[in-house]
Length: 338
Image (cartoon, rainbow, N blue to C red; front, side, top):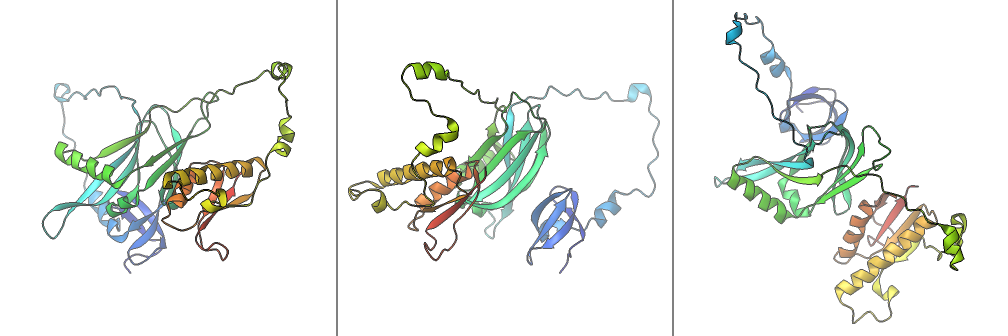
């Protein structure tokens, strides 16, 4: 094998140097570049020795004398326009056996065109399963390379999930901000056709304009409510008035409704999701460590919808849909964090 663990390598597309920390398979390795670890194909890296040699000057060129009136004036750059945070895609074209240009992969960059620095967590998710994750910071008006994505994987309806927080916390601003971007293959295809007509290199999707303010907490005068006849409960004892939680929830429609045969698929799905949300909230209210949701196998529509919702819920530490002797592949186990 050409490369070994510990080799210093050059990332060809970004011209950065890193180190191989693991061999994934015959075509891929895991690379560490300034603390950021990501997989790379072997044809995307090379040894850095030629670059170092070509950049090294054996004899530095002699500086020519210039008179003051020959010195060119520096170009004055215009003001930077703050227009939000973007996810940018750079299509990489290749020529196929018929001589046509086709997209082989997409290079993803996070673009921060604001005056604020952020910490961010990025996840690439397919069907509720995390395929790639990266945590880092991005400075004002910075272009941050994320990774490459095979173009063919766009058919799997990927979700590009971001969570942002301020690098310098502000009491007036939200603790965190989630910005998921779910794309369909048709959207990607249309964007590529659009930039080809305009002779542009990239296309982008805006994640947000401005980092949001902290939500205003509403306060209520309990004395007035009590005077009107409302019964007031101490929040410490509120759980005793809630419906009992369940550790396992079966969402098969015949378990939820006796008269379900006349229902449409949309009505059935709505009932199942409403029941899921009910027992999800009860699990949180009773501080359950986990919850098992039985959704069945079928076409996977209910499973995918539940997984999409779980990915956006901050209380979820992780969830897994793996084989279980009790449910087969028809259940998802959810683990909470408090």
